[in-house]
Length: 330
Ligand code: UDP
Ligand code: MG
Image 1 (cartoon, rainbow, N blue to C red):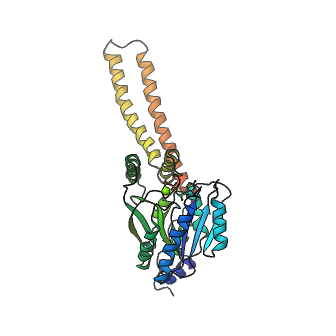
Image 2: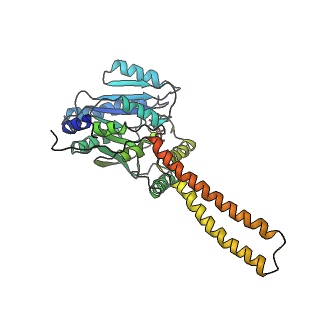
Image 3: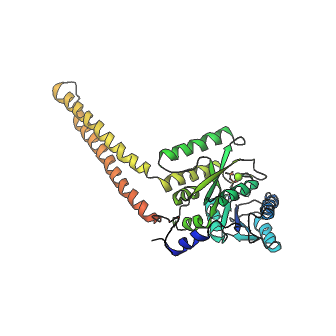
C-alpha cells in the first residue's frame, strides 16, 4: 500500500531551492577536518549564492569513536557555527554505520554523503544538486579514473565490481559512498532494517530515477586511509554475503556435478571389479561408499543451503516495493 507520506512527498518533491544536508563520517580525521570545513563551506556558499539550495542547509559530521581530537574539533565547530551539527557515536562502529547514523539524523530535503578526506572533491556536490533539480532522486558520484590508486587497488576494486555483477548484485561501477539522495529515496532507504550494512547495495535496491556525476578521485588530503587491506577484504565479503546467495547455490550445483561424476566412477569401479582381476581386494568396497556418501553429503549441504538462502531473504525483512509516483488519486 502506498503510504500517505510518500504520496505527499511526491507532490512536494524536487523543490526549487531544497535544503541540503551534507553528511561526513569521521574517524581519526583531526588533520583533515579544518580543510574539510573550508571546502564544504565554500561549496555551500557557492550554491547558496546561486540560489540552488535554501539557507536551512546543514553540515552533519559524525565522529565514529575517534581516539584523536576529532570530537573536540567537531564540537567547537558546531558551537561556533549554527550550520554545523556534530554527532558522536558511542564507539567505533565502522564507516557504513557512521554514515547511516548521519543519514538518519538529517532532516533536510536532499542529503549528500561524502568522506572527510576530500578525496571525492566537494565541488562536485554542485553538479549533483543540478542533477536533482532535473528530477533525479539518486545521484551517484562515479570515479572517472583511478590515477591516484595503486595498480593493486585498481585491479582488485574493478575485479570486485565485475564479480559482484556476476553474482547478480547490482552495483554502480566505480561508485563508492559519494552520492546524493532525495528525501523520498532516503525515506525508502531507511525502511531497510538489516544489521549488515552495505549501503551502496541497498541504495541500488531502493531504485527511483537516478543519474551519475563523474569526477576524478584525488589523493587523501592528509592522514592515512582508515581502510587497510584487512578492512577492505572484510567489507568486500560483507557485500557478497549481504546481497548474494550465489555461493550457497554453488554448493547445490557442486553436489549435483559430484553426484554425476561419482555415478560414472561407480560404474567404472564395478566394471573393474567384476570384469577384470586387476582390482586389489577391498578396493571396490572402500571406494564405492566413499564416492556415494561424498556426493550425497554435498547434495544435502546444497539443499540446506537453498533453505538457508530463503531464511536469509526472510530475516532481512526488506520492503517489497516503494512507490515512486501516484497520479489521479486526489
Ligand atoms: N571512517 C569512519 N569509520 C571507520 C573508518 C573510516 O567513519 O571506521 C570514515 C573516514 O573518516 C572517512 C571515510 O570513512 O571519512 C572513508 O575512509 P578512508 O578515506 O580512510 O577510506 P579510503 O578512501 O581509503 O577507502
Ligand atoms: Mg578516503
